[in-house]
Image 1 (cartoon, rainbow, N blue to C red):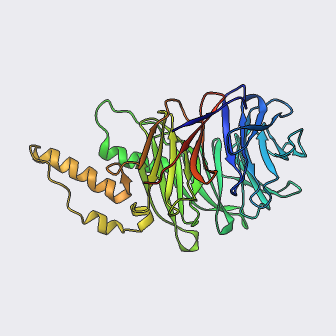
Image 2 (cartoon, helix red, strand yellow; image 1 turned 45 degrees about the vertical axis):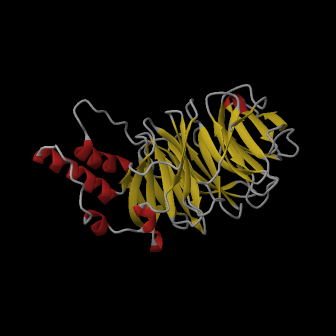
Image 3 (cartoon, rainbow, N blue to C red; image 1 turned 60 degrees about the vertical axis):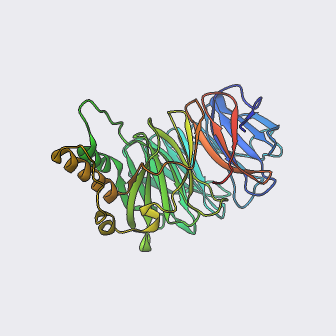
Length: 369
């Protein structure tokens, strides 16, 4: 049964994060620069208004030191002590060229990545906050960044230019770039019907499974795009889940279930879903030839031309790994547009924290199927 966490904010919550560990705290940020700290029972244990009162767009606990919380607002990152939330311990001012949309920390907590409205990704060395890399390749807003586990010099970024990039930080250049628009146009050629419209696949949120090899990206076409990173950090395969009937705003792997390929998604359609992608072709590495070799199902009563169209579309979807027949294991009608989604272990129970257009957090306990 869902629980509602209230009284932490007076404005819409924009971001949420959970500290690792059995007794970890939860942090949330909202419009107007409000930051709240919650216990695992949903009690507010701290509240702060950041200086400047710009929206708090992203929060993240240090993996190495749960007593350090980073919060982005405007072009600034504030360093906070969640157990003593009286003010910023330190501020990294003007580290974004424009408003920062997302931040991410590497596994050791020694590096902080920032994505901003200019499309720039900036890398800061911690604890000093000194900028050591500036990555410029996105041509529109950069909306999300995520470090690749076990590969501290690999960083994923995604943006409203419909690009997903894997960066090699040593040389500060992309190792590869995937253009989601090219994929969407290819699929639309096979699927579009008269009068049918498709949202462009603006990339909103990127996440990497704990194995470090599977990437998920929520996009405005309603899909969660999946990518497999192979040897030499090469893009080995890509595919997608037809996850939402409107834009998909959030996609996060859930690291504490039975395997690393449980994926949670949230969308503008007000739905929250939990997917088991362990058997998806991108994860299982089923080759394209093997998928294409499967016989297309016969549709009784359809003309030969229509059957050919259906077969071509199904063959193409299998070829690119687009999946809609196997739905989510858990499908929740949340009822409001999802701003942020955060997997968390709360008192030993796997849960999803959901922020929407309201000033409250909704907590959904997960009973693994």
